[in-house]
Image (spheres, rainbow, N blue to C red):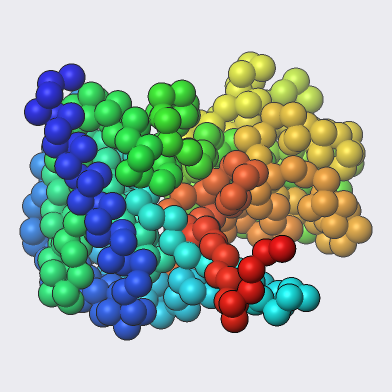
Length: 425
C-alpha cells in the first residue's frame, strides 16, 4: 500500500474522531434538522442521483452481474422517496443519547447513574446497496456517532453522490461535514488500512456477502459486529392454513429474492405435505422459482405437471441462493423442523406457519435465531418494518447487538458518579 493511501485513510479517521466528539453533545434538535434537510434534498436531487446510478448500472450490465444483484444496485424515483421517508422517520424517533438506564444511591450518599452514549466512530463496510449509504449515515448521526463509509466498487458513483448530499445537509445545519465520510477509492488496500485504526475507530460493521464479512472479521483489529448470511427457513406446520402459507411463502421468497431476509429453505410437515405442497409448488413455480427438493418432496411433486423441480444436493440445504431458487424438505414433525433449522440455518430469520399456538410458542422458544416470526413473512426482519426508521445491519452475533440494529444498538453506556465530597476509606 502506498504511503499516500495510508495517509488519506488515517486522515479521514482522525477527522471522524474529532467530529464524533462534537456529535456526542450535539442537541437533538440540531441532529434532527440535518436529517430533515437530507430528507428534502434526496428527492430534489433525483436527476443527479439517477445519473450517477446509471453509470454504475451500465458497468454492472457490462460485467454481466446477475439480475438480483443489479436490482440491489438500482435507484428509482420510488426508492428515493422511500429513502427520504426513512430519513424523516429516523428524525422523528426518540434520541437515545443521554437516555437514563439505571440509577443507584450508595450507603455513603454517592449517586451512580448509567446513561446511554454514542459508540464514537463507526466504520461500515458494504457492497452493492445504495440505500446502505443513507441508512447508515442517518442512524449514526441520530445516535451521535461519526461514520466512515466504504461501499463496493459496483456502486461507487451512486455512493459518492449520496455521501455528498449528506455532507451538504450537515453543512446547512452547522454540523461538521466530517461526521459522515466516504472512502474515496475502491482500492482494497484502503480497507486493509482502515481495519487497523483501532485507536480512532470504535466499531466496524460489515454488510455484504459472507466472504466480505469473514475477510473483515479476520483482518480487523477493531471490534466487528457481524451478519454472515441469511439462510432463512419457513416451516409449514401440520396446522397451517393453506392460503396463509401460500401468501407468506410467496412474499418471503419472491418479493425481493436478492436480500438477506428472503426465504431460502422450505420445510413442510409430512402430515400436510400431500395436500399443501403441490399447491405451494405451483404458486412458487408460477413466479419463476426453481425448487430443489429432497427425495420425498421430489416424489410427491413428480405427478404435478409444469413444475421447475430438481433433486437437491446436500449443499442446497444450507445455501443462501439470493435468487429465485428454494430448497424444499418434508419433515416428520415440529421437533425435527426445529433441529434442522438449528443445524442448517444461519440464525438470521426462521418462521413458522401454523394455527397451533402451542406449536408456535415451542418453535419460537427453541429456534436459536435472531428473529422468529409466527404466521408472518421473513421479510419483516428489517429495521424500517421494526419501526427503527432504518437499520445499520441485521446482526447474527450474540454480543452487544442481535437482529436489526437501530439507534439504541449504536450506543454504549457510561457511568456518572455524583458526590458531595465522599472519599473512599
